[in-house]
Image 1 (tube, rainbow, N blue to C red):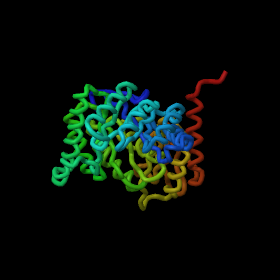
Image 2: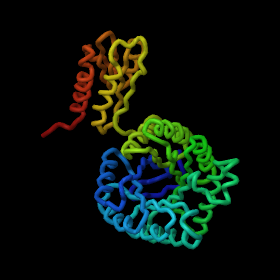
Image 3: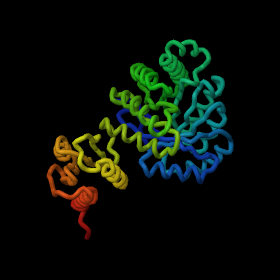
Image 4: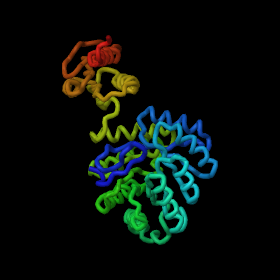
Amino acid sequence: MGSKIQIRVGEVGVGGGAPVSVQSMTNTDSRDAEATLGQIRSLAAYGCEIVRVAVPDQAAVEALADITAESPLPVIADIHFKADLAIASARSGAAGLRINPGNIGSGERVRDVVDAARAAGIPIRIGVNSGSLPREKRELSEKQPARALVETILDYVTLFEKLDFRDFKVSAKSASVTETIEANLMLGSEIDYPIHLGVTEAGTLRSGSIKSAVGLGALLAQGVGDTIRVSLTGDPVEEVRVGYEILKSLGLREHGPDLISCPTCGRTEIDLESIALEVERRLAEYENAFEVAVMGCVVNGPGEARRADFGIAGGKGEGLIFSHGEPIRKVQAENLVEALFEEIEKSREKQSPEKP
């Protein structure tokens, strides 16, 4: 699955058999190094593996040197329009550059950026969005928008290869889920370089998560994609959480517990929604991977609870607690969450090495 070629962003492998990595982008003023580092540390705590930082001017380049020196994550400098900023970012400790060669300047300026990346030993992401196509592709984009994206990227790939630079990944993004899927399926069949996936400008937490899950999930399920960024309006930590949920649902990564809960129906005789939400909240404190089922009735409940590592199978005002496939005890509905976590903690204590 994924691309044949691997690049490295800091210590993170991308493509060539490496696990699909999860990225995000800071939304602080990147000229404020302390605020940006604070957000990067929060992202790292939630499992973010690569972070992108906007570099709009020289002040941001100066802050970038402090950010990269202290960041727990490899930092990619995001540059538009100004080749000099990309060159300076490569010299300021960036672990990678993100550029659109079409807006960075002339062919000579693109060469200058490539040479700076080569000298620094860092990769470049060739990033093209549907809203930033070159003028000569706009007519094609009206009839075949996905093909226009792909052809633009292939032109830049050819340019980079002529410059004898192959340390790059590519991205073809659109706010349209179907265009994103179509373009990346074409890319996956035409190049061996790593592909960064994302539905750009996906929206707020709810709508953006759904669009991203559909678009990225459809591609990853077919073996296309090596690193992902879920683009959401709001706290970038949510991008990381959603990204891992997408990968977990496809069995591509393990990251914290996986919660299974039934949708409720007329057979449900406990307040399943509040129980499931409380279980989800408390599971966020755990880093290791295990499966928890919270089920509301006797039809599918016992079966799902047995299959999970831990589970609740609800009945009339009460429920059974399961641990590793076995029913442990029956408790009243108001005590189900506490009883479930007692069993989870017992299991963790058994697995922990004995204290001297």
